[in-house]
Every structure is written in C-alpha cells, then in structure tokens.
Length: 600
Image (cartoon, rainbow, N blue to C red; front, side):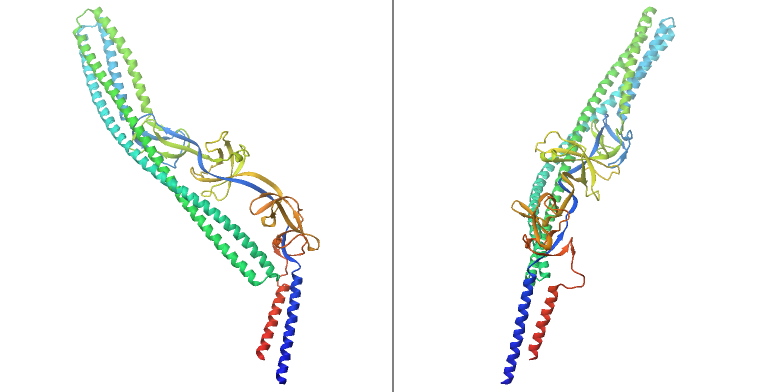
C-alpha cells in the first residue's frame, strides 16, 4: 500500500510540474504575439518607363530592279544572290547573234550603197568623156556587184525566216510556262488558305495559354507571399509547423501549375511559329509562282516582240531582194543604154549618184541603231549594294523589261510597324527608340523614327518607319525586329517593390515603421507601374522605412519588430532566436519526462 501511495505522489508531482511549464510557455507565446515581425526597405531613386512594344520586319532602305532592253538568250552572269556589287559592274550579258546579223545586214546594205555610189561616180566620169569601152567595163562590174548584193539579200531572207520560226517555238514554250505557272499559283493559294486557318487556330491557343499563365502567375505570387509570411511567422513562433507545411504544399502546387501553364504557352507559341512559317513558305511559294508567271508572260511578250522583229527583218530582207533585183535590172539597163547620147548618160549618172548618196545616210542610220542594240547586250549595275534576287540563268531566254536582278543597299535598313492612334500621337520624327533583333543581335540597338504616316490605314492604324544603321551588314532583310516606344518616362523618382503597396478600393497605402516600432499607415499617390516596381509620387519620404514583408498582418498603430532591412537579416549569425531556444528546451523537458516514465 505504501508503494502505491508513493507512486501516486510522484505522478501528481510530475503532472503539476508539466502544467506549470505549459502555463509559462503560453504566457511567453502571448507576450511574443503582441508584435508582428516585418521586413522593411527604404525607397530607391530610379527611372521608370511605360512602354509600347511592336513587332515588324526589317527591309532594305534602297532596292533597285535591274532590267535589260534586249531580248535574247543569256550567255553570261557574273553575280549570285548575296554577292556585293559595285556600281557599273557588269551583271550579265545576252546573245548578240541576231543583233550582229542586223548589224551585218545593215553593213551589207551600206556596202551595196557604196558600190552604187562608186558606180554612179564612175558613170558620171564616163559620161563626161570616157571611152565607151571603159563604160561597158564599169557597167559589167556594176552588174556583178548587183548580183552579189542580190545573193546576200536572199541569204538575209533565209536567215530572217529562220528567226521567225524560232520565235514561234519560243511563243509556244512561253504559253506552256504560263499554263504551268497558273496551275502552281492555284495550288499555292490553297496552301495559303489552309495555313491561314492554322495560324488563326494557333493564335487563339496562344491567347488562351497566355491568359491561363497570367492567372497561374497571380496564384503563384499569392502562394509565394503567403509562404514567405508564414515562414517568417513560424521562425518567430507565430504559427504551427502544420500551417507552414500547408502553405509550402500550396506553393509547390502553384509552382507546378505555373510550370505546366508556361510549358503550354511555349508549346502554343511554337505551334504558332510553325504555322506562321508554313504560311510564310506558302506565301513565298505563291510569290515564286507569280514571279514565274510574270517571267513567263514577259517571255511570251518578248517572244511576240521577237517574232514581230523577225517578221520586220524578213520583210526588210525581202525588200532588200527587191531593191537588189531592181538595181540589177537597172545595171543591165544602164549597160544597154550606153549607146545613148553623152548628155543623156551624164544626166542619168548624176541622178543615180544623188539617189545612192541619199541611200547611204539611211544605211548609216540603220547601222547606228543596230550598234546601239548591240551595246544593250551588256547590262551593268545602276547602284552599289548586295544582290537580293537573281531571276536569270545562263542558256535561258531573257525578255526585254524582265527583272533580271534586284539589288539592295543594306548599309541602313528600315523597320515598319503599324501603331494605334493613341501611340501615333505621342511619337515624333527623330525620336530614338530601342530595337531588339533576337536572331542577329545579343543586345538592343537604337534607331530613329524617320517617318510617321499622316493618314490611317484601312484598319485604323498608322505606319511608323524606323531607320537602323547596318554598316557591318549583320541585319538581313526579312528578319523580325521588336520596337519599344516609350509612352511615359519618369526620371529620378522614388520607387518601391510592387508588393509593398496595398490597394484597397480606390486607395493606395503603405505601412512605415515609426517611433517605438509602431506601424504607421500612409496613403500614397502612385505613378508608373512596370509589374516589379511602382513609382511613388507623394505620401512618403526617402528616409522612411517602408514595410515590404508582413504588411498583410498589421494595422495602423500595431507594434512591429524589424527582422530584415533592405533584404538583409538583422539576427546575429550563429545565435538562435528566443523561439528556437524555447522549442529545444521544451523538447528536452518532454524527453526527460518520457525517460522517467519509462524507468518507472
């Protein structure tokens, strides 16, 4: 019996000690809960910007289409796409065979005319007292020359007829090319329609993914803030471990949701980029086929012109035959009329000389025209720059007026974007803007606004052109560039972290740590908000210590304890806080009590 009484007394003593320890701990927790742990920061002076961002395509400042004036087969090309070319450099040459035939034909006509002049001069001399034998000899020589001229004229007829036949073949080939190009264009248009539908669907997916990501980001920020606040409260013994773990689990789920949404947005953007690339390829294909159609139409037009030229040459050659036949008949007639009177012969010889001399001027003009066309067979660069397009190939037929080369000067490039009315009204020609070209430049460059459209486009936007220096040629035509226009800029203003400012209905306010560590609520006027920092126009001073963490748990007049300042902990390194020491002491007491019970 004494043993049981003694045991009961020990148990009661232990229970009494435990109860006393619990009451002391509760008293300490109540005392610790009389203030809130907070972090503070001083306002910083910085520059805030409110910007618009637009995307455009880089284009060359100067682009020139090079065309030739002579239709013929291409015999030589000296430059390829991407090559640098100087002004007046020879770009390409075309076959001069047909033109040379025209030159030779014109020279042959001149030779015939010169022969007629010589004959006429001789006849004049003979008519003025030369012997009949010399006259007959000269007449025979004239007949021989006329026969040679007739032979040459007939050869020219055969050559011209061959040119007409070749032109017919070129016309048929061009017609076939036109048919094929039209078929390809229809297919490309169908591809563009399909690609446009895909782009539209992808754009909707991107918009949905961006909205979902934004909502997820808000939830993540809220979960992060809750966890950070709970962590600080737990560190000072303000909440239980279970509450902290629950907030950490919520943060982890919010982070996972955000990562999932971020991956979904990236996937949607990749799909949109793929769809846009497909659309660009389809459009480029359509442009290629349309260029092919234009080339085929030009080739057809050139072939028609070539046939017309060949037919004119054919008619000219036929007339030359007729002229040669007439000259031959006349030469024979002149020989037959040598027995006429000297006066009659002199008169006729003089008339023939005048006619021959008049024909010489016409023949020389024909030679000059043909020689000019021969010079057009060599086409030179009108400006210095880079070859952007090459639309000719050695061995193919080139039609006059066809764009053979396209040359662009890329020392300075332009970016055009379409902006809204509100943006256009705050921009000025000469303004500097920030430009990023992710595919070519590692950092932003500056450009200048060179042109703002005075009138709206069909969609109500205004075209703005920005010039960028490109001496090293890094920027290529067709690259995408992002342009940032500054809507508002505030220099040297007070800023705070965005989460330090609390928004309630129409009011914005912060908590400032005042005398005796008392939280003071101050209403502030805000300015530019870039999502991370916010401009403080008025309401606080640069020397104020603004609560940036724990502000959700305090009210005006609460006592606070500053544990972090400007992001740095105020606790001494290597020393445990009061709550940590109490936790370890309590754990040790519980363990000792358990050990004693086990011994008994």
